[in-house]
Length: 116
Length: 118
Image 1 (cartoon, rainbow over the protein chains, first blue to last red):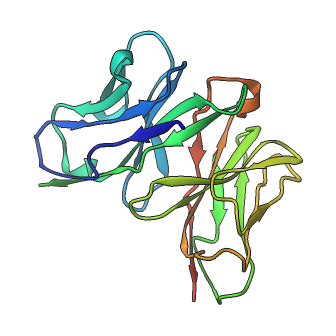
Image 2 (image 1 turned 60 degrees about the vertical axis):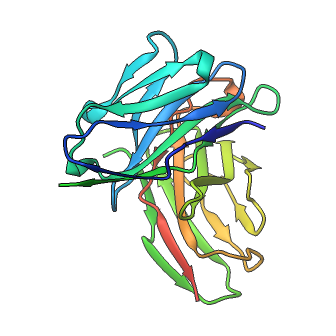
């Protein structure tokens, strides 16, 4: 069965530290990849997405992610985090499911706390 | 403003009672989804609807029911058969559903309803 694995469940960083959150998926076909973010008390919102083309995608607030097909990975990065990046981050993969259907498969999330 | 609204934000119910959570969208999206979010378990799909008058079970549909009589509305009923109903419920929508074979399954989310069953 398809699955998405986020390796880090809880991450604590100091401001200005670099961030990398891992995301791996198990699906051999064509995928679309997403990172969503949920700030405290706010809606879940899209951070960035990969559909095709350049495997390095830029998102909002200085985030980026790199799709490495050979590693089935889509890791999220930010060179210098801020206190306001404290949030829960979810990786999701749009994969084929039951014939021609596709659905989003979600990772369990990574809780990031940035200390000022 | 286009978006998804869920009401109420907080809901309390006694055990054994059915409760219906509201979800409305004015984005003109065909597809709508209900998720349940529990700490450490990510988002789990309850039901989804590709188009009006059609819906399918997700991964954890037992104890829940939905209807899709209008494009903009997708209410979720948590029935007394749901063994552990206390949770945070998220509604989402996307331009097109999976049956279209489309790659564009970016989902937009509402603010959620926190249901507590006493």
